[in-house]
Image (cartoon, rainbow, N blue to C red; front, side, top):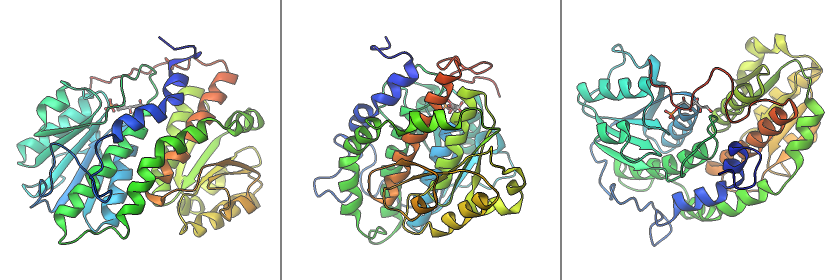
Length: 360
Ligand code: F6R
């Protein structure tokens, strides 16, 4: 049941510290510096030259996050929308193809997986459902252990995907390099162990409900970010449009000035996701929108310079930059939820959408 919450989506947001703890438990090595994934021991990915992710919707956004982490560690990685993964895209035996799919039943993703298998690639399914088609059809599976998700909008499973893909990225990149490509792996694993606690702290805050009220009735809602914050921005926009039916778009922060700035007015709040120290340019991009009258809502750690520019703030705890995006996304989940709730939307079953899309 809904466990006392008004909607499954709310329950699934509010219990993320539990599902995340479950996804992390036993998966950090005893030295706290590397992943411990049963089916993927050290060396499991030897010979992998490049990684291609195939996924749809929210799972695609998690895949993009994984891509960025792998690239940071020196591994060539790309994320494809599964429906665009056609025969023109080169795949070979040195390519690891990772299908990211919560349900494990998405037709577009299964078709991409099939294509990769036929091309001789090694395949892994990152999924929430044991015994799903993706888990059966891929060479190996990594389960995100989020527990069943009933709300049509993916929330807790995105967070669990990000965690599992981080661990997978650490394993793949360590196998591809002679020594750990990560600057300070202990700092990342320390942040991972503290993640459920950090998520709980975000869940205990009430800023998102207030921001939802303040900007209800806006003409459109924009979300911007760069680097690891970019997948968070486009996920924030997808969730928002899905359950509020309001117009929402996510942009790479640097792209605003190449077109979307024409849409910006005092009636289009710009949610600015900033999760790393190197995001100063994003602050400049947000200010460009602010100059055209747009309210800026910073989604960031408390003392980031973006907050000086912001009209409102959705704060997240200070943590490792590789995992901070997940916390920012929880704030945006709450924003979407509260906005949809104020508008009286069918939050758990938005119009025209299905939980699992089994047609191409
Ligand atoms: C968004 C949402 C969809 C799914 C997409 C892929 O909230 O739920 O965009 O993420 O249909 O589904 P899976 O992950 O089951 O392959």
